[in-house]
Image (spheres, protein in one colour):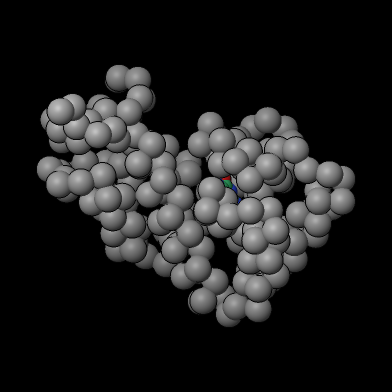
Length: 177
Ligand code: GUN
């Protein structure tokens, strides 16, 4: 197994399947099996194509598997975050929007929204935090609580595709000149 650090697209296309899986194991939260599927779709012409392959891999899944993927995400500012038990990717994302340094009122608001969300959908509220601010994360949770379960599964999977895209882009550098 090789360590994870940014590599060029040519290097990624040339990795063994095992090393490719190690490189991209963290792209979908607690779901390394998708990297195995994506490895088989090489060679890729761009980093965006790698990201799109992750989205295609979970789009092709059964609803049951998609729900398991959504449930693999920790609550934002939730128990795992408080316990320091997040994946490095999730910790970095949550910190990017300041979710690791909330006021007690903000913690209480996250707690209330996470609970309402679990109650309504039986899922964690997943949003691509790096594309949001605290205010838009709160606003999105309130808005999405009005979704039907089917709309909400689609919204969560859309956000997971956005999260995966940014994680993939972090792992692929420009080609050397
Ligand atoms: N958005 C980006 N990362 C995460 C995460 O780890 N959990 C949730 N719920 N949403 C996210």
